[in-house]
Amino acid sequence: MNKRLSLKLILIAFILMQLIMVSNDASAKELSEMHSGITKLLNGVWGSSGSNVFAVGSDSTILYYDGNTWSNMNSGIPYVVLRDVWGSSGSDVFAVSLRGSFLLHYAGNSWTNMNIDSSLPGDSSLYGIWGSSGYDVFAVGGRQSTDSAGIILHYNGSTWSSMNTGTKKYLLILTDVWGSSGTDVFAVGSSGTILHYDGNSWSEMESTVTNNLWGVWGSSGSNVFAVGEGGIIIHYDGSNWSEIESGTSKWLNGIWGSSGTNVFAVGYSGTIFHYDGSTWSAVSSGTTEDLYDVWGSSGSDVFAVGETILHYDGNTWSEMSIEGSGCIVTYLLEDKPPQLNALRYLRDNVLNKTPAGQEIVRLYYEWSPVIVKAMQEDEDFKEQMKEMIDGVLGLIVGER
Image (tube, rainbow, N blue to C red; front, side, top):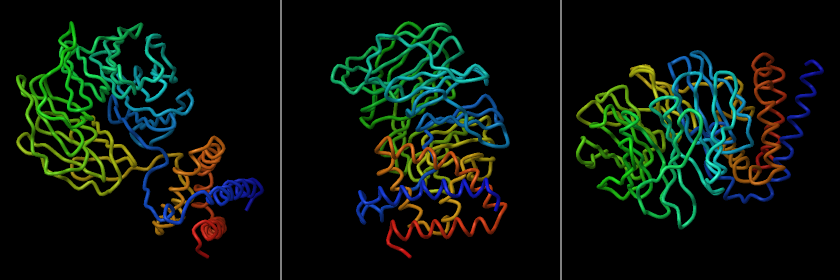
């Protein structure tokens, strides 16, 4: 092994030893709990084509797919949760965030934080974004305060400004937005709330449910679907909203279709439902990981994101890999779910709770792809890493 790899091995050893030091704060019961997921949780996905796709998520994560591989992009902002992404083209893309109300824009070269309405309260969060064009964009969200009636922002190509939501509901969180045009826009949110914009003002529509709604999409203004908690699916026919039997109680988080007869809804535990124009039916996703959003360039080129990234080729769903996101312990412990999940629990519930722990996690993931690649190319190095990981696990979860 060369000197450079030896130094990297020492660094990884140091980072892993920090896991041992902080693990004293976690109980044996906590260590036995299951927690699955990819390096970063992904909340939203959108693309201009099947070879120009963006996905956003926790820790300001932005991933880009060029048709062959997924790779990380620099968001240029502190760690926040990016909630949704939409664009008018591959060089005009917007992303919104929870907490702090960062609103990012990509012009083809880099991501920058846009200036949004200065009157927007500091405890605001933005959940969804959609537009009819690059100069007619809507972002929706809410506040954690009693005087909140939801948040809707509009972008006219130069500035963002607040809009009146047209409702007096308090503690309203608007979670998603979609329209058939700039004068026919739907926003959904908490307690079954549905708002409609006719080009002049927003007004509340009569809803048939009280479930929190998490996603909305339609093939036209008279064929719109919304999905949400408890497996709820509701449909708008141009006149009324009505509930559709989904056959599941799993939360549905995202919805998209290539047409009114080819629609996908995704949710918790790898849930994917398909609508063929007459009925919704469950399809095999091949995973039990939670899914939060779905988008496609066509009915045979669909992406679903969450705790993993899935791709549908028209026949089956399969998991995609992310370039530069290789994880050492995942690579070495893929056949040992209990140990792998114990370390994941420590990451999410111990390390990520403190600034020092977050820095440890950052360093670990920064170096992991290089180490994984080295292990793939050098079997001896892989065995040395495996011995070290086994030793660390022995100290953390009591296994030798």
